Length: 149
Picture 1 (cartoon, rainbow, N blue to C red):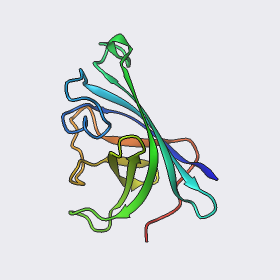
Picture 2: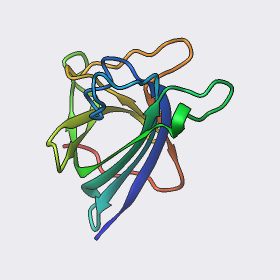
Picture 3: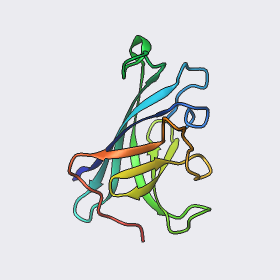
């Protein structure tokens, strides 16, 4: 049975580089994205199982944390796996999510038990700005215990 392994949230920039990853159309009005990612793991053994990703994106409503017109929703679900290594860091732990409907993948670098950082299509860190980053923070008490071999 799959149990929640961790829930990660963030508000990130919505740039040309991040749009293809969560499936946001290129022409969409988008300046930032709110992420809510839950990873599930299989018991026993704590191996990766499934994920749900809920995003809200759009143009920010000035002076608030909301969006003009309420924003647009994007939901994805599928399976996730753990891989080891990137071109610049062979010891890196990568969480790769594959959407069941589109077969698109999204990859994150595990920075620690509580932090994931979005990677681009070439497995490089997405670079934010002085005000925004692409790091998702774990909320709640669940933790992922399985490491890649």
